[in-house]
Length: 336
Image (cartoon, rainbow, N blue to C red; front, side, top):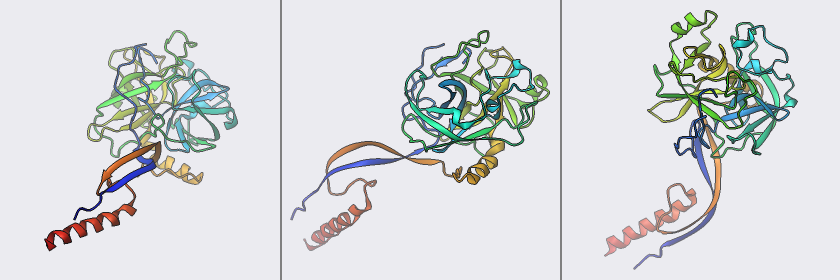
């Protein structure tokens, strides 16, 4: 006796668990070399990167934490100049403090295109942000509507605890100034530069006002750096053990742009994990940093398969026919 095969003709929407810090579209091709001394980023290489805009003009960067939350820096949201000398700031200007004037663009490298654009409902600056020293330079933006994740829009992972002694590879990206002598040289294509985290004590000698909430990063003696308009963007690093990308810092300030031997200063994200959890919970959109995984709907696909048992990721309703088929086959085998 031959059992009829189960013909599977299934039309369904695939649900994939997309983890934070992954880059589904990135194909590792090198972009055209042109941020200061940087390269043009590939499509999907930094799917967590966002452009924060006022009246359709980019002024600061940010990163996706979840479908509701964007991470950036506090100094982007002051309508007046900070007391810190202007040559130490990485932003071109400061926007008004009203969230209704802001939009966040996601899922694109090219700001001249028409990507997903979202409204902001709340700006939350760290209450202990110090305008003179730039300490606690961190802020959260609450979106008016949740993001829809896809292959070009993915959340970044929060830093590991404890932080590894050394990261395998680190990058910053942004749409900021590409020429330190020309503040109007804002780039419309996302640029990237490689980074190395500098020893904190060595950096303290260059910047006596450095606090333990700050880290320094540069690329040796090369003129690679973040610049005006890049503020709020993520410093991301990966670890060989899992291949995922983690946000280690937030672009905050620096001495001019791209000066050899002068690192950029970043907010240490690991110091603010509890603050982020507290704020997101208070606002009613809690961020679970212990399980940074989102469900992404991919394109509907038709599967035409001939099989006695479906794949393991099919609905559990197929399990009973499989078990019955197996039991019947075994009984027939014993009968013979």
